[in-house]
Length: 371
Image (tube, rainbow, N blue to C red; front, side, top):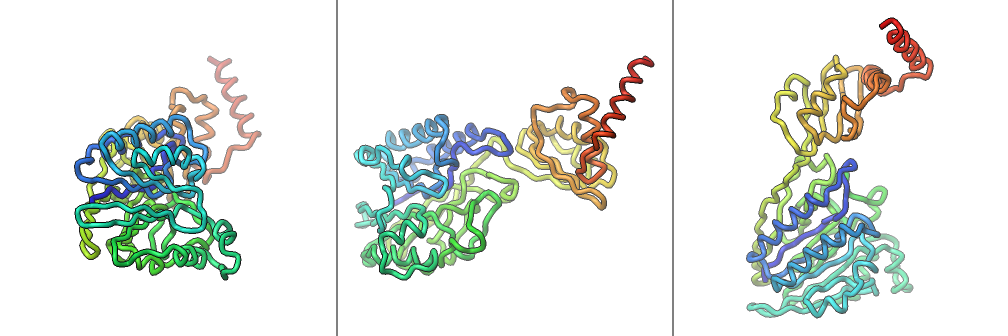
């Protein structure tokens, strides 16, 4: 069996108020272009960014799944913490007729399916994102004091045939994984579980963590998100995870780069160096270290980087980090607004007082009269 391990699509997500749907569609088209390299697609949660996704996000996912069905691919999908399991599972019985298997509402055990390939049986087990209280109601007599206890009970009550090949789709935090700013987690490590819980599975296809990575072994792996959803991910290497599952002890993994129309990039340094960089339509965060920062720096950089989304100044006297509103260019701002920007830059993000603004207005009016 050759399969494509995907996770954390987050369709409909915005980055600093920028709609990423076109960028996400371009990535999914790249996944479809690889269709001769896999027979099965496994999507491990967070299909959407919200439990009530937009019509546009749902239409994009519909086009993607339809294209996979038309290419005669087998598809397995589980819900993540951002998804509504009820909405995702709607029409799931009908979709099974087209070889699209979506996790049902959690009922206490893994949902399992059997697939046959040239080497024999492969059991595909599905564990959508589930909370402790949802598990406890099925096991009132079990001692469940932690998230790890809860998942252990589910697995104990979902026996697998260890003599056959077994794949698990899960949307979980595994202890020791590296996180980014764009993931949602509980305080501390309340929802972390040990990797050893999954020792009986030959391959564990994980979602939830946006950085692609292996945990303890190559076959226990986060595919990572399909796009960079925060500036903390700017240095991450996103890729498609292709898995060739031959025998229980023969699993080959190939990573193919995802190419972005607009990369998510952080530039840090001095204005004179950054302004010399090539014009770019990437989504950019700028961090300046100049001691003297002039108001036109912001606008000159914006001309060079039209999709600059964050602008920060960090030096010995100033620490400023603002979101850039792309619709507000230099030309559209009033003199008062420009003064406010300048004042914030020079005073550690402190706003000008009402008295100062009133004084400025008087000066400006006098200048108009004198002219």
